[in-house]
Image 1 (cartoon, rainbow, N blue to C red):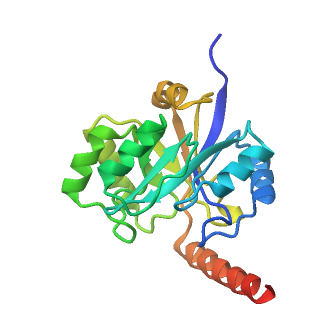
Image 2 (cartoon, rainbow, N blue to C red; image 1 turned 120 degrees about the vertical axis):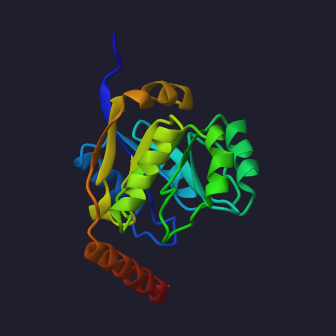
Length: 223
């Protein structure tokens, strides 16, 4: 019997990322309300929030991490232990592979964020499982277009991500694909994925960033 098709969010942050306001219980509720059946919580350089969310709903949450390497960012899915930030990219990938993680390169061609040089991408692309070809927070469409061209050139499967830092962003970019519960299952099902994508408008991006800053400031003053 074929696996059922699930809707998955592959790039989402919680309050455990310094630039996100998404509290865990409300984040999980928002994901469920938006029809998301697999939620990859990809906080910056930590899995603390993802582990707590997984304890709340193990069927929904995939423990993941967006790691800033010495060159650019990588996302690892199905982690058991945290990957440290700041290491060379190939060393970071080696640590991820020790845990059997599924690895993707988020927003690889976004000039406004941690931007990989062409030579660095060519070095790591043979070592990763997929390329994020759509990120809802990319300001310019060409950043996503170049990412798709990169994936096609290297014959890599694709992921997409809302890169949600606030609740309204959750589910802006998702994949529908055969159900998966491990890296190995994800490697098999990812090539059958279909994307559903919507960009975060630039004005909404600015509003979201401002709201996060205000919320964090208010929270710090209450302590």
